[in-house]
Image (cartoon, rainbow, N blue to C red; front, side):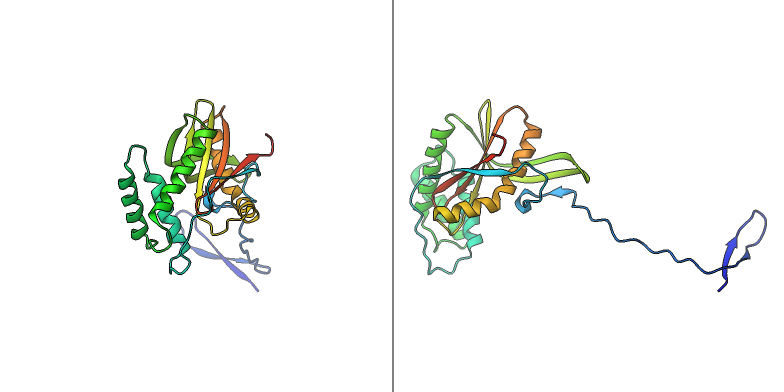
Amino acid sequence: MEALAWSLTAGDEAAPIQKNGPRTWFSRGEALSAPPYRIKPSAADASAPFPALQLAALHRLHDPLPLETAAAVEWSDLGDAVHAFLACDLPGLSRDARLERAGRLLTGHGARGALAPESLLLASESFSAFVERQVPGARWRREIPIEVRLGTEHGERLIDGRIDLLLETDDRLVIVDHKSFPGSSDAALRAKAGELAAQLAAYAHALAIARPGRRIDCWLHFVTAGAVVELSSAAR
């Protein structure tokens, strides 16, 4: 089949040029597979481009919090209430003020029937005491947004997330992620920590770029289970 091509020259009208031979069709190749620009630590998995973290230790802070299993409460709603309370349970508040705040947050998130306000106070106090033993004098930085650019084999990418709690000393940073998880046995907590390790690895990698020269540790605070699982890099 003959194909027509059109040629334009200055001062001339367009005229068809006969081209002999078969038509050649061009098609796009398969789309290149590349990861998204933004890396969300909360969605990171074992394939993320960060040094892996390993389970180092499991610490028990208190007995598992009593949960009202009959209450029709979504676990995610309970988790939101727990996170909100731990973010705003500041030093200097009276016990009555803390109880009122805990109850208001549980009610507002639709989780009042699942957990008592007193249980949130116990979880917060036990964790604070653990921090003081492990990282005495640490400065508490709650709900810290973090954005760090890094080079990868796919070009520049951006780690974009929010750290629940950052404990800071002159030579050490501890990344803390609060988790509400229904399991409470050692085996269940270790297995869950393994699933979540990539999330903390992303934060640790970002901080190593943004705040170089400090020791960086990672903790998973399983609030309702009353435990902290420490994660560390394989290199340490």
